[in-house]
Image 1 (cartoon, rainbow, N blue to C red):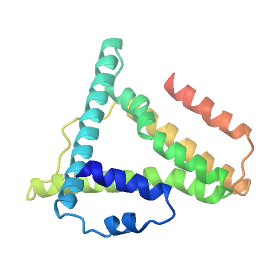
Image 2: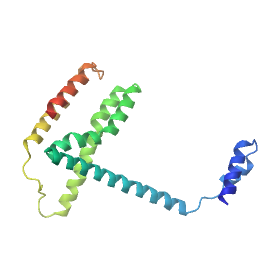
Image 3: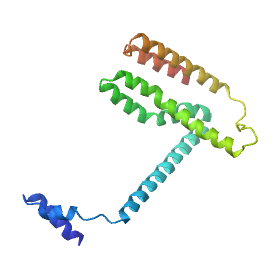
Image 4: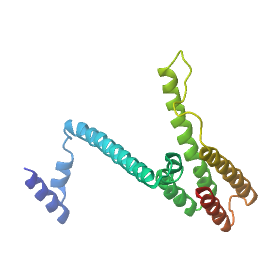
Length: 187
């Protein structure tokens, strides 16, 4: 049955008269197809989650083997992997001639992730412990976290000033300044 449909479809592509193909396309799609698409979507999400969890575990194991702290790994390698999608989309927007939108997306996308991610997580934590106040389990913050916050605030304020001063078209050398700032932070 499927072989006949494939033959009719290929015959329809080759001829000028496509009545046979049009009649087959008008058939109603079986109801089970919607469930198959939903199952494929859920399966894809589960596979991506499993792969991401394994990659994070692999990077954490490599960091422990090399003697690196998990905080440093999270601020560098794992954050870099999380930002590749933003890099590609922001570069595409900037190359399309919309520098203000690209700069806004550079700041807006991570900010939205932080606000929603922390907001949902902290709300869920507060609801789980409702009468009691929420307490973080990690203890005091390490010096590397404070250094990361200092570098982050400095780079954001510097970027805000540079982009405002140069009317959202900073000089090419500013990318080198941000790169040097990042390398300084890593060291």
